[in-house]
Length: 389
Ligand SMILES: Cc1ncc(COP(=O)(O)O)c(C=O)c1O
Image (tube, rainbow, N blue to C red):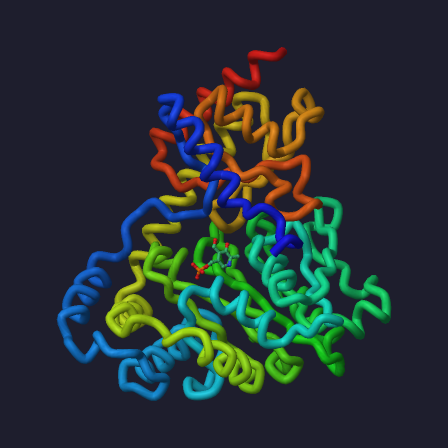
């Protein structure tokens, strides 16, 4: 526990609580916590399912609902990515993908095994390695390499000790994207190594301007190269609080992950599973509308930032904006700058250092407030930027 850094969301909750206590009207762009409701037809299905008494019992992997969910996930994957999965062996539902990520490291890392994490990263990728008692190996990524890890440059020893290699595109926190060639090269490099290629594809639906996010499993041979992929209902269907995600891919790896979980949890509340089946198999126009909402917010934010003299690139995916701290404030750490924005503007942002040491010098805005609130936030940030000039 001592090796774990202070958790990012704990830092942000603390900043927020302090500002609220001072009576500040806080605009929270800190955590990537979708602000809009889940699809109404999914909520209705939950209400119906929750009344069925058989759903109040423990969930068992071979139950009818459980098998139905696996089939629904496999069908969704085929529909979204053209990836064909065996629902019985190549799909594992999770209590949110974060749960699966943490337990993957626990299942596979011994004390002398490395978890390779391109950073800045979604904190659980790195923290899961530490919690499992493994060795965390950070691979710096930044604008100079399009936020892609240079795996070919890794030393032989690292390649030998590396047991899990995390990739996650569209990327949190930087919003960077990759094309299929990136995964092709990665799979090619990983072949023959005793390393799990672990892709976290949480944001594949939140894409703009015609960009289509590929799956690692689109690469022929990815499963055989120990490839697995995490996904979630949290972002595509605004179901973050429901706790439902899944891992797909290499059957042997999923079996070990399932075994580890079987000692720890009893699966997902069956009513939530039934509702998730509805989300995955029902009409998908909800997702299209959601993406359009995020696109408008993105355009408003990027244009608004440019108008106040803080230029950021236009992201092709996610609802995040990764912004270098303006030169005038470069003497501040990202945490200090985030603190300044809360104190002076009442705007909560995520400090880049919360995503690993290579996130220092940046902050992340999560566009999880309505447009009107975003406009207010921009106006308040404009004043902060102007104060010290
Ligand atoms: C990259 C990434 N993976 C996974 C998650 C968590 O997903 P879940 O709600 O399924 O645990 C998040 C949430 O922010 C994320 O950014």
